[in-house]
Image 1 (cartoon, rainbow, N blue to C red):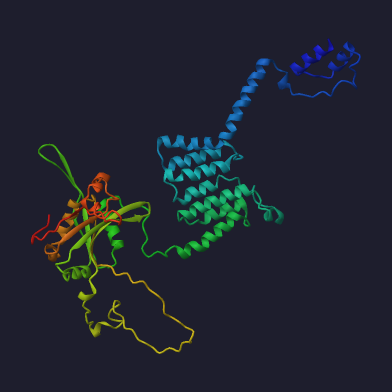
Image 2 (cartoon, rainbow, N blue to C red):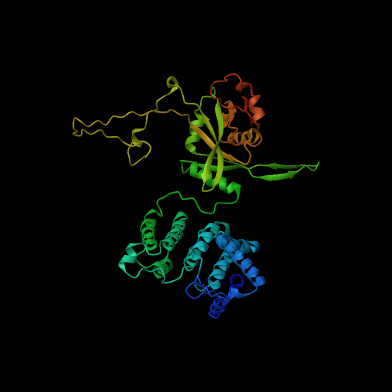
Amino acid sequence: MARRFLLQIYHTGCITSTVIPAVARLDPRLSYGHVPRLIHCSSVFCKSKSDNTNLQEIIELESEKKPKSLVTHDELFERAARDAKCKASFNRVLETFNKKDIRRRGHVEFIYAALKKMPEFGVERDITVYNKLLDVFPKEVFVPRNFIQRMFNHYPRQQECGVQVLEQMENYGIMPNMETKVLLVQIFGEKSHPMRKYQRIMYWFPKFKNVNPFPVPHDLLQDPVDLARFSLTRIANDLDAKITVHQFPSTHITEAGEEISQPYVVGIQSPEQRNLLAKHNPNRPVFVEGPFPLWLRKTCVHYYLLRADPIPPEEQVEEELDPELTGPEQSFFFPQYINLDLKKDLGDDDSFDVDEVVEGAVYAMCMTGQSDQATLAQWISGLQENNPVLGKVPTVFRLDSGFRELQKVEDIRHDPGHDQHPGAKQEHIIEEKVLHSQGMKR
């Protein structure tokens, strides 16, 4: 009877001080000394069985929410991205998180999620957004109070998160401003790792800000013709080089209703290249080679070269330079060299081996919208207006199939030149056609 009573008390969970005398009267052997120590439970456990099941369901739901804290922050940005991925939507998410909890619980996970989503919203180069992201940190909470806290890296997780924000600013080339410094002092103090990172950025960024004499803009030109002009200007080594648009992109509709699109053809040639091409031996061919990649930040463009093989040594002719043009004041290409008898030690040896690689001259460059021979033939035809020697010189097209979309692997396998030398590395010649016409080439 006593044990049954104790079992009922155990299942219900309601144990009070009035239960112990009742149990002792039912069984004298169970006195105060023999009764096990009772556990004081809260009033929640004294509810009915249905209440216990509801409580268990709530606990399970809370346990499911805990490991998904990072996912919930991503969901905030995904909901904001449904309307539009812009700066206003990103700032709205930051304001929503700041108003949600005054203590800013989970701010570290939220900041990491925001850093990952910044490129999607196009705010990775906005200093005001970075300052608002630093404003998410609670103020004057992580500031060390004494030298011991400062020595043992006070709140390392939060400091590491602050350094990560500054590192992303550094990767995108964003220089902090005075507002950034004030926020870092309020959040972490003057003697903290984020503050040291800020000081290093402010020291090195002004020194390397203008170190590149040919900077690439962050927002590239959208027009392909303008982008080709900008790319060819960067490749050319002569400021006097002239850019010519041989063909603009256009679309025509025939009488049968077919749509025919013509790609753009943009070329560049300097006066020095024009003079070299005029002196080219008509019996030796010129080659159209490419495409060669050129990376402009995250955009890759391709260009083609009109070049020739190196001149054999027996055909090379040394030109006599004008003595009036050999001074350093008149020309930078033919400076005056003066041999001075300098006193050197016997152990000084200035000789070193240099592997001289002889290359052929490059006569012109171009960029096109399509990498086929027909489009490049239009470029050669356009060059004949200022270079009539191209009507006498055979032209060979040596195009690489790596960047072409129209050519397939089967076309390379059926190439007759592919089977002649199976063991050597071949140059895939798309088509070799000698054109000797005096007029415009097709």
